[in-house]
Image (cartoon, rainbow over all chains, first blue to last red; front, side):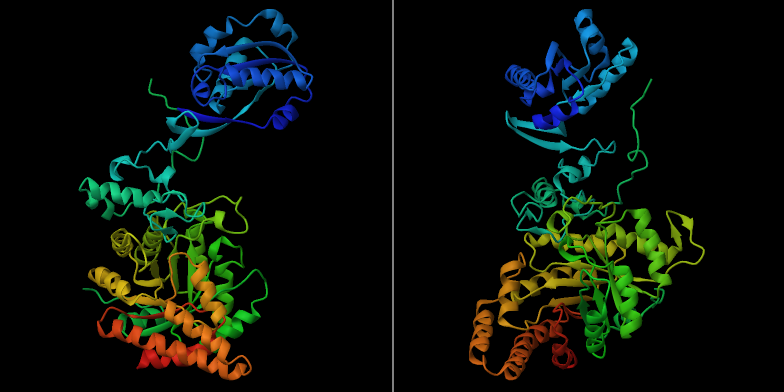
Length: 221
Length: 310
């Protein structure tokens, strides 16, 4: 899932300070699991907006805001009278969700600002509600076959291709006062356990940023 | 086998298999290097070369390329330019390597570098486009092939490149295998983290002996009890032996009133501790030399050179 957390309301209020009539949209998928757009969170946001003197003219869940096709369907429920009044939109979703909405706005000729209420952290494992671990950086050139399935980009604080570095102490990382595991020691231990230290011995070239350091779309037809 | 090319005094001594001593200089947050140059001058007669650090602990200091050039020129000492991959991407580092050559530098110590998060500018972007092994690969390509990414360099740089290793590392095997990768990447010498535990150091050096790379053992002679205690407390993973700490404490207390005498006793105590330590490793043929990391303690070098020559 894409893990998100709530922004401080002061920051949201600052973004909305020029606007009075608000439509609130919220994600029905990942951000619900992250407890950022579940019923309680939505009610909390409605209350915040009311206390800040905002007029919420309409609010609605979008099942999956990052999916443009789904957005086209969900948009049908937004009443015209709310659209006539709205000054700005606020969305509780990941960054991809908001930006898919921009494409929808272009399609529907909506020329109003949209602001985000959440911070997006990445592609994560859900251990349990309230404990999410970012595991994948979406590099586009997955290294997991060489590292026993443990990602050096997300598990090593420096994202090294050849670790561990001198900053590990008894399997813990210098970043964060030796409280978190060193990703490269996890990789070493895992490869040792599965009898594949031959992979640990391999010198890995520097990561190839040719296709990563700029705008990216996956288009195969 | 083709004869190894030599670009510096360090390269020459390593190629000859001489047992050598290197030192360390730590420029600070300043544009005036006069203190470091003075220290370098005092150290120069005893060392083959001296490392110049690159913002250690992620604490911003004067840039190590500029400092290395100025120190080498002003103090008449050969420098080992410490170059971390923390702050500059591959493209920038390739440019710095050519710049380093143009400024007269011939030795690089390839380091990952402490994470910015550790230092005084934690909000800074951690780059790490390369790592310490892939930086060795880049240096070797530029020097040996005269290319960058396959593109020809009109006048290529000449460098020897070394890397670091930690004899205190746990699990040790992961560190040993990483040394193997660094050697495969083209690293020509190793300077180790400070070691005080002889048994563990022997085990580590024996394990990396198969890579056939000269190893300079990192040592940290302690100028005072405060220095010893501080090192023991604040350097993660390195424990100063309890009997050493006790001895240094007694020197501090016994010679309170005679500071000149106290200095001599400290120097002698360092000599007595490190001589058997180094001699044993040297006799086992596990070392190519010693790297003294005690900064601001240049008066210890005449004593150390006795150990090296002995």
